[in-house]
Image 1 (cartoon, one colour):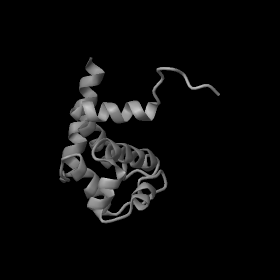
Image 2 (cartoon, helix red, strand yellow):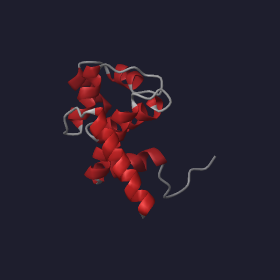
Image 3 (cartoon, helix red, strand yellow):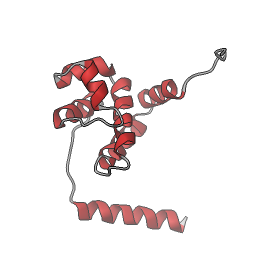
Image 4 (cartoon, helix red, strand yellow):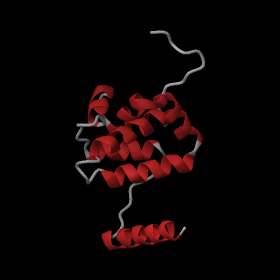
Length: 121
């Protein structure tokens, strides 16, 4: 099969967008972290975390921060992975953020307000 001239893979473009648009990277990280709690969404969330790790320092550098091998990080951030808190914190730190906690009631109220705004629009 011939490679298209000027074509860019979806993955390469995603990494580029994450590097160029900090707000997008932060939003993706927030959604990914929230989705880890849902078994149906966990695989996609882990792949998003892997993309963030690639965009901000690369898997090797993030793995070094987490104190694990690159291969272990790759497995932990695969669709069936099971990363440790230390691994998740390394990815969050690589993006230049820190982990925080909100009350579930506050999150649900914020989601309801956002849904109301989008329904009214």
